[in-house]
Length: 176
Image (cartoon, rainbow, N blue to C red; front, side):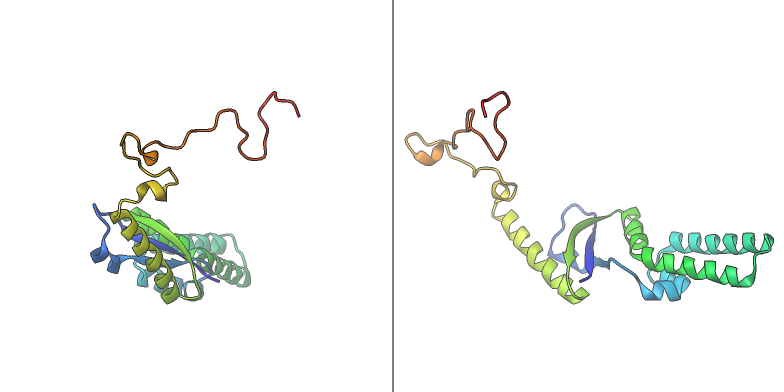
């Protein structure tokens, strides 16, 4: 099942209006990037990667021609470099997004991009509702906030264990 990373531009406040700019990048092999590398890089507006790809291919081909390598080997090296671009295409997109000051919001596992969007937005909207309800203490695993009302049992936080064993490991120096 494909894995998608979700990216958003860095702004002061990510809200519902900014969701149309979220980008889902599928991890894995990109066939069209391997087959038509220059076109794929230009289509996704990866300009630095496109420039680097052209320079790399020209330099390697020029060096192999100057060294007298046969045309079959040059073709094989070009095919291997195209496969490398197909495997690393998603990383190049993520690198370009981070260079453009975008941040990664989440990782989603789904069958296709539509399912990934649905899963992400289900989780994201639940998180946004939780933040608006001031559930930060619950979300980060801390005890719930308490009120200081004398005589009420909920006004005191639970006591911390003293000398008790937490987990499977005994205290150091204790008898076994």
